[in-house]
Figure 1 (spheres, rainbow over the protein chains, first blue to last red):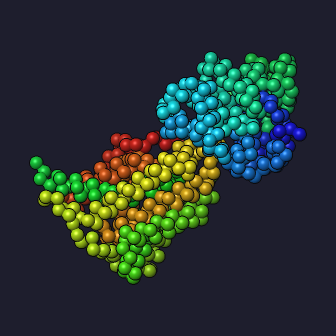
Figure 2 (figure 1 turned 30 degrees about the horizontal axis):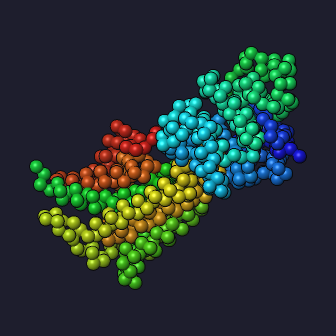
Figure 3 (figure 1 turned 180 degrees about the vertical axis):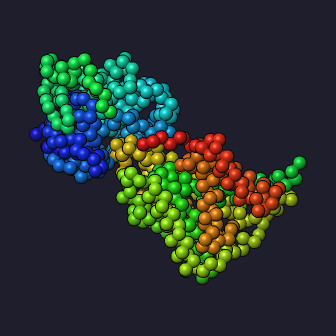
Length: 244
Length: 293
């Protein structure tokens, strides 16, 4: 049994059209999977649906054998799925430390929380230096470190990242993907959406191509990188039109 | 130069605590839910009438009545939230709906209060409402002092809840970034309901104190609405420290105007401040600019 199974999921916003038009996808325990695809393919929508921010109109989301359809986001995170949305979801007027504490909000065991905050500080010394500073005063890269640190505090079974490299300087992007690999070493399974397809796939074990609300391909990440058709359509010269 | 200045400041400081308490719930409810609660002063009046009833029928001191009005209004607030606002969170017309709903609530409450208590101007008059301290020449009403101190004490209590408790973290998180609160596992619906209840509980406490400091009649809440909105706009809507500082600044200013220019001009202070703030610094002293979500 796969850790996460998506069966024919159809979803969209409000009364709008279907964005996901019957997506099937599986995520295996312990892997890093990267979803790529053009703008508007439904990549973010898929993660939001798994996280419970959107309700599937059809189909099922099954995590560790349990159907998640209809659960609230705060119930889903307690099942072990954390979602790091595209817009850095920090609390701007809270300090770095308070933001990390919020990361552990869903933890039952509060002594575990302080332990893990210490571990997050060990991995991101810059956060420790600035623990009293408000999150709004951090640079973009530091804010992304804080988001990552927060995920470390919760240490979910499955962590979903939506375009973590968006808006970051190239040297920080490299560091970021190392952190994502680190998640795997710490026992987490990763499902990531990346516009930065090459680097995302380089970091991943397995890749999946989403287009027009459906999965069009999946397989080992290096296989996707080498596939001439996918190269042309989705990696190529990145010549695709900006649709959003 | 101004001989009355110490008197003005003492009176302003004493009254400021009550004004701040009245504004605290309004700013909390706006901060967490983006609801401009036009019924807030009407909620204060409900509590003032409950306090008046307890005082005239059962001789319960208004300060003791606090122990009744706060929990009652807390529960009342949560019910109001559940009935009228819980389902609207994702409505694209959220602002219009909440403004009109709170406006309607204020009208209904005014009507019901008028039906039950008639239009007579009321006030509770416990012994201390007629007494005063004198510090040299300075006159300090006991009623105002008690209301001011309890008001500021309750705000401090609210602040401690917000800063240090689990629900406080959840409320602040929801205020600052609702979707982020959701993704770290905060049940934002439940948090909003409790925050609304807390805000209305503050209105409840304010109503009990209000009952012996000011007079009230069913339609009197509209005037207070304008004053309270001025306070929280000056402080920065959604900011608790802002509401407190806005309250003290404007209370002292209005006492000053009362004293120096004339009683009729006191309330003008608030509206003038409202105009100036909106023109010069619309986000207020402590507010952050609201970003489109």
